[in-house]
Image 1 (cartoon, rainbow, N blue to C red):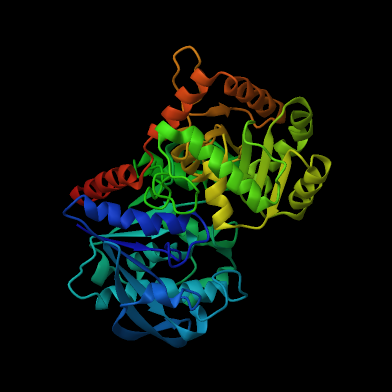
Image 2 (image 1 turned 30 degrees about the vertical axis):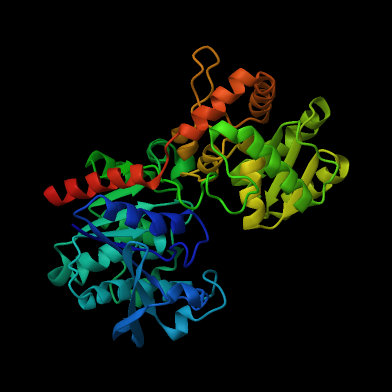
Length: 478
């Protein structure tokens, strides 16, 4: 079974969001199952670190027509960490100081998508059986194959994976001319061109990154962002579902993590967290912080989608009522950045915020924290809660998307569960559960049973790979 992943991010080459984790980890896990050759194709962005491309090999070059203009594209390949990754190089569109947000986005991704299809002609000894396109930047590939390339590639099964339906690739209908195909109802969304809608309607199968998110997309206009109708069409054909993303257990592992002062398992988790707290407090410049009180933490983009507006409503009362440390690592909307900066000024002995992102601080925070707060308005999958579980930090989440699929709320009567959760998007429901978590922390027997359950949870990409393999196999059998 030969599978090709097409996407614009792949860890460690480029990672902006969860898409990079999937393309970086899932291929090698699929290949480990045996009988599978999974490869990745992505742009050769100039911002990729040169040391990561050591050993890259030139394959061939060809021309891609974007509208009436021909652009030279070079195809490279690299054998990396258990799988082959192809790179498409183009000086005009990919030699830039960042990955996203340019005035000519539609042209850039048109070149990439056409380039992916053309590149399959030059992949030596690799005939694609399944082409899995990821997110809207690849959304026109299935339609291009059905309309323009069917004679050459019509045998390929086409899968489209939605990582976040909020970003659909909406643009002017004249964009169709870049692909040299006519604008049609398949790509029409309220008079505009929509890459994701086209992919949903023309793919053989559509999936998203958690089972609950898949149900939310079918059941609610709030979640589906206008595409609920076409997704329900796919669901009726049994061509839509959800597979929960996994976590890179090699990268995020408290037993081997070089970024924390003491590697630990459940057997020495208390000591490991104490040392991580001291190291984190030293980094944050808070010598007056002590390790004998619980720490609640956020490592996140500071946006409304992440539930930050709920936190702003109740956090002052919680800090007044309880003795705990509150750590915030992230950046985003200015309102929330300013709020947490001011919160630290109001509670200097309890709160520390770091505006920005630091991988060093992130690793320390996951290892040091006792409660990991993630009250998202919506969350297709989420990785923060999985990392927290791995490090014995109990996630406190809203029951949405992948958060619901990975966090089981604590049941003090059966001692089951691996975290805490609430259902309604309501600040006072969240407040109630946070207070319940603080009460539970005071009972070591209950707390460390929960920590053990958390650390024994398995959300590795190996589990995801098994489900993807079954999906591909079923497609090919049909």
